Length: 456
Image (cartoon, rainbow, N blue to C red):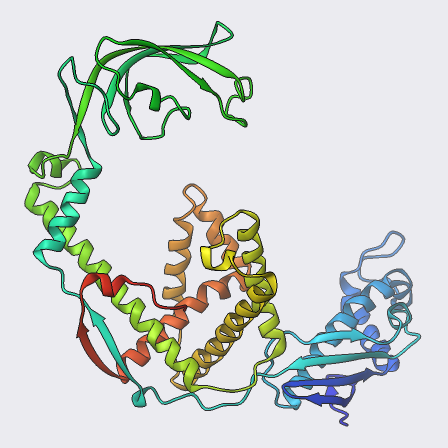
């Protein structure tokens, strides 16, 4: 039990329970001390109080107390709870793993009226004490792949394939999948044309899925000069509610059939991408690919680092932190399940098995978060204002036209700013480990480098 002084207030702190990383305290603040703080607050604000019938700054304290006493006391109680709980944490040398749970034991109205002492219990979880592994004692293998001429040629060919050109085929040529057809069409529902249902000289790539389901399939086998009725049913829902679910007929004339051809990688092709010539395009593609390889190499190394840190550290975890992390993960899993987006492996599992698996992931994330934080603190890693500012700007760019609002949001919300800070801090700790640990490069093919291998 202790009786520490909090300004003009004496509070009584008593430890009620200690279990693992959790401790519960009872805190009592006498009503007389709250009343003293109330009188001091009223005296402090008296010069600024203006009420009808009194000269400015001359309202009697007793009248202020009668008019605003309980409202002021509400603020005082909240202030005292915050300050006294923080003092209890500091005096007991607790490193809290989250915000303490406060449970007011006295009747709140009686406390604010000055009729009862302020009494509450505070339950707080501590960050576990442990010594993080020395990064200089760690060993890792970094997978690397050097870009080859074959790799770059494949990238260029993929780029050329994505920029197909189409050339007119013979009049007798029948359209097949991936060909383009140049068509005129007029659409009707119950024999009546509808807005937006007619076009002339429209190029349609068969198999692109850009038209109403079933439309493109009915043009496969058509040739130049053919006229046919394409019968389809509009999806429901549809962007135009008047057409949703209705049957339609498109009177269609095929003007020509065009065969697809990959673009030639020449100077003209390069200029489509803002490059001076084909050599400049090849250089840009090579640099981009090398950056991807380096990024993937680091990702694989980071996974190995986190796996090793998880293996090297075993300590009790704050239950509240684990539960909060699990809740975040589980809500996302449930949302993906409702949307039908669970991966094949998870779809086969029961909710009980899923919950078990994702709770393990939550525990891993909490453990790694604590280890990375402790390592960063031990090695005095700091995040500069410039780094945080760059992260805010990068995030703001994801919302074109709303950049200023996004930056202001982060500036006004410390919790949101902390979410930006966390990944920067994590990467800096990983950089520290990469710098100090013993590293061995291992050359691998690109398929090995990009294969999936576990979780972060």
